[in-house]
Image (tube, rainbow, N blue to C red; front, side, top):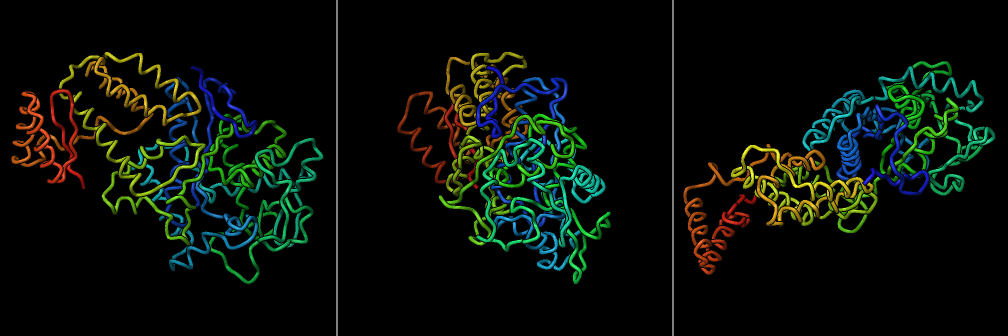
Length: 472
C-alpha cells in the first residue's frame, strides 16, 4: 500500500508524493521551554518520531527540523490572542528566580533528555529561536518591503488584508476570518484588522527584559509565529513536504506561518502536507496546570513506570483521535509491553541466527502504518503474529526486529527478569510449573501461578515455558 497521510490543509487523505524524492523535508513545532513538557505535548513529538520512522521505512531520506521556542511566546495565546500577555520566558524567570536564559537552558536540556528516554529520533536540527534572530529580522524586512507589514506603537504587524489582495486566502487551516476582538482579549485599536498578528514586538519602555535585541525598528523581540517560518525556510527551503504539530496550532500559529512565509517568498504552497495530532485528555477531561493534571515524564518516572510504556500508550489510539490518559490505562500499556518483551526474549533465547521473516505480517504491518500512520492497527498486527502458532519463533523474532524500526520499543535491549536477577526460590517455582504444564497437571500449574502473582510477578505462558517479570 502506498504511503498516505491525512492532509489538514485539503481535509483529505492523500498519497504522499514528495517534492524531491531524494530528500523529504519535514518540520515539527517543538516546545516552548519555560517549564517541563507535558505528556500532551509529548504525544505530538511522538507523532513526529513515528512519521520520521515510517518515511524511513518506506525508503526515504529525511531532513528533519524541530524548533525550540525560547522567546516570544506570550501568555495571551491561552486567551485567543498570541500577541498579548507576558512572554513565557520572562514569566518563568520571576517564578523561579533565575534569568530567562537559565530557564531556557534548563528546560531545553530536560526536553532533550526526555526525547532520549522516549526513544524519539533526534531531528537533524533543533533550531532555537534565540539563535536565529538575524533570520527573523530579515524575514520581517522582506514583508515590510512587500508592503505586507506595518508599524504601530507596540510592534510590527502582518497585514492580512494586503496579503489577501495579492490573491492568497488567509487562514486555510482554521476559521480565522471569524475572529472577533473583545471577547477574551483587550482590543488593539491600532491594528488594521483583528486578524493581523505581531511579527516583532517592542520592549516595554519601563521594563528591562533578559531577552531583547536591536532591530531596524527599535529594541524588542520576535513574535511567536515568525520564528518557525524563518527557521524552517533556512533549513528546508521556501517549500517543503511535511509540517506537524498539535491540533491547537491550527487556529492561529500555523495559518500565520503560511501567510508570512508565502507572503515573503511568493512560493505556493509553503508546505504540501500538514499533519495535526489530537489533544490528550486526562480522566475524560481537559489537561491543564490549573487542574493539577498536566503530567510530565517526571511524574511517570516517579511511579517507576517505564517511559516506553507511554510510547506504547500513545500508539493505542490514532493520532487524529482524542486519547484519554488514566494511570490505569498507562499501567495496562506497561503490562502489554512487558508481555511483548517476554515473548521476544523467549524467541531470542531459542532462535538461530538467520534472517527468516514472516512476509505475511510484514505486509499487514506496512499496510497499517502506511494508512495515515494507523498505529493501533499496527499493534493489532503485532499481537496477531505473536499469537499465531503457525509462525516460527525465528520468524517472529526477526519480524519483531523489523517492526521495532517503527515501534521503537528497544526489543534487543530490554530483558525480562527470567534469568539471573530472580531468586532461586522463584526459579524453582517456575521449573515446577513448567513440569506441571508438561504433565498437564493444570491444578498444580494454576496454584503455582497464583503463588507467583502473590509474590509480585507478572506471568506469561509461552508454548513450553513460563516467563515472569517483577511488577514494580
